[in-house]
Amino acid sequence: MRQWIAAAGMIAISMSGCNMQNALTENQQPQRVKLTMQEVIPPMAPATPEAVAEQNKFLEQNVSRFKSRKLASAYYVQQAKRTFNERKPDSAMVYFNRAWLMDRSNNEIYWGYGLVYGHKAQYDKALYILYRALDKDKENTRLLTDVATTHLARYYQQSNPNDLHQSKKLLERALKLNSDNAADTFYKLAVNSYYLLEFGQAWDYLHQSIRQDRGKEDKTFIAALLQHERDPQGVYTRQEVQ
Image 1 (tube, helix red, strand yellow):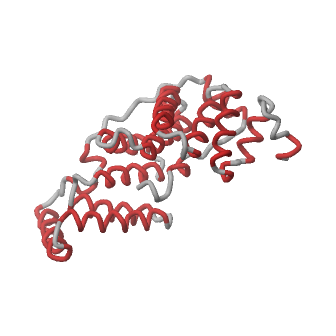
Image 2 (spheres, rainbow, N blue to C red):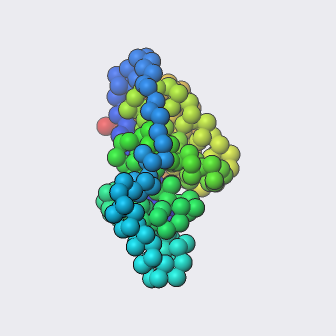
C-alpha cells in the first residue's frame, strides 16, 4: 500500500482565511456515527441463501484458480490498487470485496477500504476501518499519515477540533518513526498547524517538506500562509506567488 496513491486527495483544502477562522470558531460537535463491520464491509453478511451460495461458489472457483485463498486475496488487492489509482473507486471496492472474501486477515484490504471511503468523503467509515488496519500495523508511517489525513478531511467537513488534534498526534508519531523520507508527513503537519493558527510552525514544516520533495511547493498554500505571516526564512513573498 505504501507505493500506491497517497491519501492527499481526500482533503479539499480551502485556504481562505474566512473559511479557516469559521472552522475554528464555530466549535461544532457533530454526532459520531456508531458503525459495525457489517455496515463497512459490503460482503460480510449475505442477505439470502442465494447470496450465500454465490459466495461459496466464488470461493471454490478462486481456490481452484489460485491454489490458495491468500494468493487469490493478494491478486484482488493488486487489482483494487490499480483501479483506485485509475480513479475508479467503485471498481476498487468490488476488488477489495473479493479480496476480503478470500482472506480477511490481509491487512491491506482494510487499509484499501479506508482509502476508498475517504475518496467518497465517507470519513466515519474510512476512519472506522483504517483504525482496524492501524491496530495491526502500528508503526507503519504511511498508514499513520493516511489516518491523519482522513482526520484532517473530516475536520474540514465537520469542523470538529478533535479531528484536528488527533491528526496532529498521528502525524507527529509518524515523524518520530521516520523523518528522513517524510515530505508528505511534514506537509500535512504544515496544513494542520495552519488550521491551528500556528503559522510559524506551519512555515517550518512546509520548508522541511519542500527540502525533501520540491513537488510539495504548493503555491496556493504558500499564498494562504503569507496572508497571515511572512515567511520567516524569506524564501517566499506575496509578489512571488501572485
